[in-house]
Length: 109
Image 1 (spheres, helix red, strand yellow):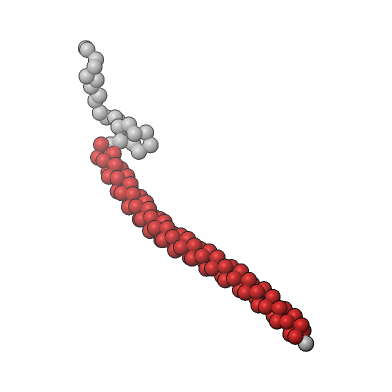
Image 2 (tube, helix red, strand yellow; image 1 turned 180 degrees about the horizontal axis):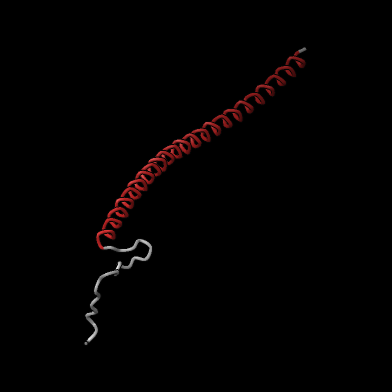
């Protein structure tokens, strides 16, 4: 009977050791997962920050493009008015000389 109790006690001790090892392994796994989760969380936070910066830059570029297009349109309109004042043909970019006298300063007559 004592031998049987000793065997039972030994089996229970062995089971306890197994359970203890398993608990240590599970604790290590949990710690590892927690560490990975912290890293992923930091990466996500950094990516959100970078995404916000890129979105802001994108909006600024769109606004700058609109401003440049408006400025270009204004410059085109001014250029068109200047050409009209100077009598330049929009297609050719040369003055309309019909009915005008042209004096070439390079010629030596």
